[in-house]
Image 1 (cartoon, rainbow, N blue to C red):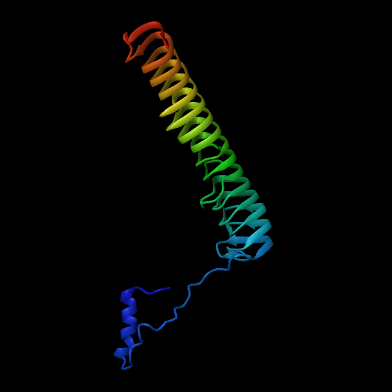
Image 2: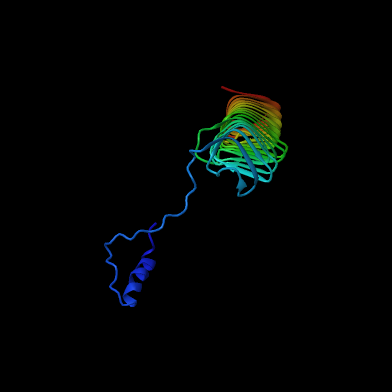
Length: 286
């Protein structure tokens, strides 16, 4: 550990003030090393934990078979079975089954995480997790191949699988979002089914809900009361269908696009760049 320049100068000046020659600046001055816990080279088949600081072994130890905790449990890699009434923490990977009130896995999850309140996996820059998360309130995974189920909210940075919750959020997902509100931040390929569905950038697949927003680039089917997309390559079926650039079909009471290659079928059809912008019933543009 190196001292800041100001503290180093003060340390060199103290011997001179005491009547002794100062220590030469080019002389190596040993500094006390900060305390570091043992590396994850200790393995325990069974670990018991009562509260923070009251547990068998160290937080950097690996538990290979069974971890039992009351208020909290904190170890490195945890495997097979993890039962903690309170807060369960793994600074490495979690393999097997984790049951807790709040479960946090900083590394990848390979198994099942069941939490009364919150489940978290993949906080570190690790390979995506594989398995399932279930919680009453919130599930978070940096990347998960598998299932997320929560009454309140699911959040995943990416992965392949299914999200089921009141609200689902994903940056990149290959699979299904099922909830009241489904949001995609970057790229989704699959289906969104809910009251309100939205894709921010790219969406390929099916949106089924009262309100569907396909984002910047939508390819597939939208079915709902209100459907909207910037670039549409597919079909919109609903009461109101809106697109900036549409290639495919719009079927509804009111259909609108700036440019169209395909057809519109509805009570009133509008294409801004067409010679006749407004037409009832049917418009063909090929």
